[in-house]
Length: 582
Image (tube, rainbow, N blue to C red; front, side, top):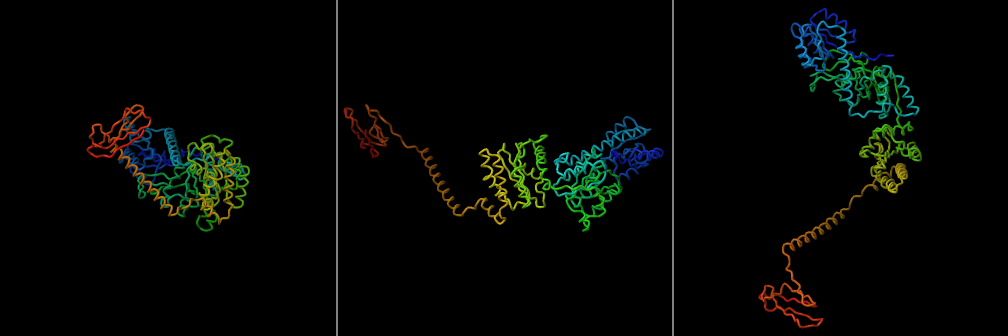
């Protein structure tokens, strides 16, 4: 059984007294640390320029460059290095000044060994916490996987047994499997079951690193090592100190980086870019690849000695299409995580997954290599169904064949939404237009009638029907489902109708404005007995008006039917007459 790794520090000890230097040269390694002993400030600064240190124990009073000069140099060139002041001429004022300049602690001489050991232990705990924090910050955007491996098929039970067996050791592990089969989840599980569980877990995608920065990403660099290196930086290997370093897609590393990685695996030592001295790092290596490394070795693209170094223990992961019985449990776990619940509801999956739909999906996959999965969710928690379906589809790793032949039918009945997610390998087969036709024609009508299971089955039948169609007809079906282009004459007719409507509307507005600005004159009614007579605006009682006209009324007549007439005589303007009958 391996012991828990200690926080081994790189210590720079600076003192002008030979007896003290001789003692510390022996005692610091006994404490489990790497020691560099210097007799004065100039030697200390020279050592700092060659390599980096975790902590420096500096005497303040020395001939030549004093301890204050060394402290200033450390804070300028290596701000991550902790400083401990040690002096026999110390005072409270000097201690306060040292702490203000960034010193970690102040030890008055003569220093006892247990006091030095205790302060170095605290420094080691602080640095370990810092490394772990840096590792967590690098993974902040990453969605954390489940702490346990999901699945009870024979292949998954074999993987779990291998993980339980190899995790407590420090052996290098090679995880092989197709892209998306969960290699990083297995690596995390190995770390969580190991003695390094309290250390950082650092994942590196070797294929995503820039070619000119690979060495700096792995091993770090000092300030000014190359153009753009404005500050010193720790490499990912150093960040993983006392923890686990996961090298994903190790087969994508170039030959020069393979040589550097091989040397690190053989010696456990690394060197920052721009430095001359190597230093030891305690890291466990777990690698993963989706490529056949043995074939690459035969082709000369991967070093054989590196292959044997990283392949001491091999774990093979089967794709999801070979363990479909794990789909329900995996789906429930992922949906529960999205819903932020401990467990997903028992009826989260449609019964169609286990009945007729499952049979059709199996037949479809056996004949065409296409995997179809149906899922329902009670609520999207305010998420967009397209984003939710895409995340669920990728997380399920549906149809993780080389062409990604997978289809997901996701239904959210409470949200009244449905989505068909199509794998990249089927984009030319089941088009978006056909998927929309299936949703509108085979699914939504059932849902509107409250027939949920019928809608799910209708959607599956529609998808299967399309995929069973002769491939030569796929394009024709897509054209039928797609909107037709308009004929040019339709645009001409639309333009003419719009122009007529616009002209009529303009005339109406013009007439309305004219009536408002120049309203017509109004007449009035006069009551005569049982009759009312309309007096035209042309009538003038004065006999002379711009409208003109005069009239008379026979009040003595008692006839029930009579007529009166206003003649247009006497007016100065000679206007026309008006008439009315009663």
